[in-house]
Length: 113
Image (cartoon, rainbow, N blue to C red; front, side, top):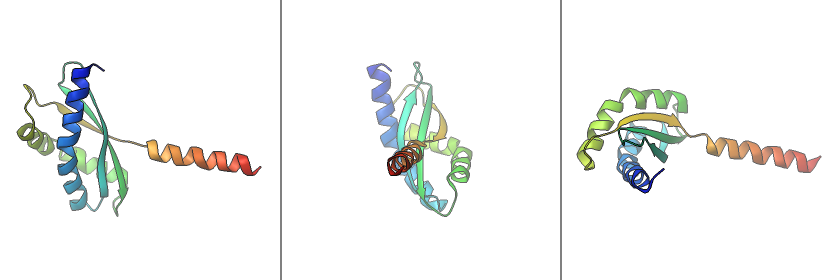
């Protein structure tokens, strides 16, 4: 990514953190955090990676509910940042933490043998 896309991704990540955290509480999804954002070169599309942890709602269901409310989230984002175009948002679950735990467990099992 270029420096410009990285800067815009950082601004979007910060701007989305509060509304998504509030939405996570509304949906009983627990802690919803934005782990990272990837922008297209033309800054019109943003892939938002979320971590959902500690809620009554499974992460997959929480993601579907967040995707359903994406237009509302996009409008709020447009009010909070100053860009020529408010990017289209796509939400994905970030499974980095789960993969890390699985690798640690595999290493622990290999060391015990």
